[in-house]
Amino acid sequence: MRQAVYGLPPVDLAEVAGDAVQVSPLIPGSARLEDLSEGSLDVATVLAPPGTVERRYVLAQILRALVPGGRMVALAPKDRGGTRLAKELAAFDCPASDQPRRHHRICTLVRPPAPAGIAAAIEAGGPRHVDNLALCTQPGIFSWDRLDPGTALLLANLPPLKGRGADLGAGLGILSRAVLGSSAVTALTLVEIDRRAVEMAGRNIADPRAAILWADVRTPGTVPGSLDFVVMNPPFHDGGTEDQALGRTFIARAAEALRAGGMLWLVANAHLPYEGALREAFRSVSVTVQAGGYRVYEARR
Image 1: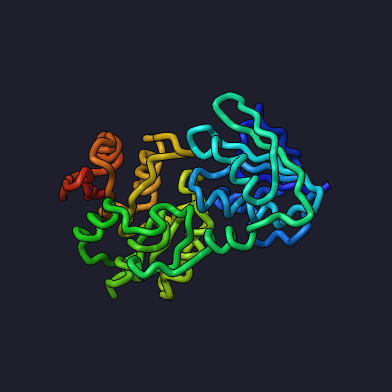
Image 2: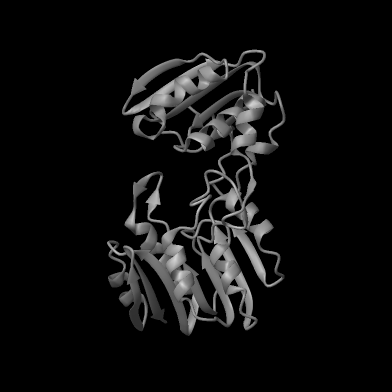
């Protein structure tokens, strides 16, 4: 039986076979959801993402890949799209049972011979060029259709850089593109956990000095060493829940990667308590600017 899973559904809410193919873009090494051929799956389990356009795109791609008569289990927290799942599946002409359990809604359906609206949902959620960013992007990527205000503040206060560096949590490559504007930069490694962002960054940055890695910064050894600088706007949510440990891990990885005297430029929400972690790992730390609820830190290894 050919099975796939999207994301990491809670084990007590959805049973997933051990040989199911993982197709989430947020799990490095996973298969590409878009590469599943039509009718290639018998069973699919989907932890549906919270964004409406992204969620409909994922559901449509899974329906496209399921064989007629194939079974889908789709679930999501009630406050992150779960209450809309059954209605969205019905819009594809796929009526589903809808079971509430542990603050989730769990929908189960059998794929009909000809679901409706699949092509339109895939087109709406697919890659595109956004003029106001002058970048290729895709719904579901962090800040996919606008410039994040923290990134904007860091861009406005970032000095010209030189030597070898890294952009941790690089996203679409907005920071990296600015960094590479300095001819004194010799190499830049972009590290990003979202495969879609990695693919879009590859389109947005055509520079032989740049290397783009689909990887989790939390994995030891991911970031190259002996760097002259690191830039980052680290995430502080994991699966929709605030996780300050995530930012502290980014700080630790940056400290490990930098040579003695190397510099970190970090932007973060002002309420996040990162200064202690920075002072533990770096010789000197200063706040270069605070505005709009964000702080830009400059730290020397």
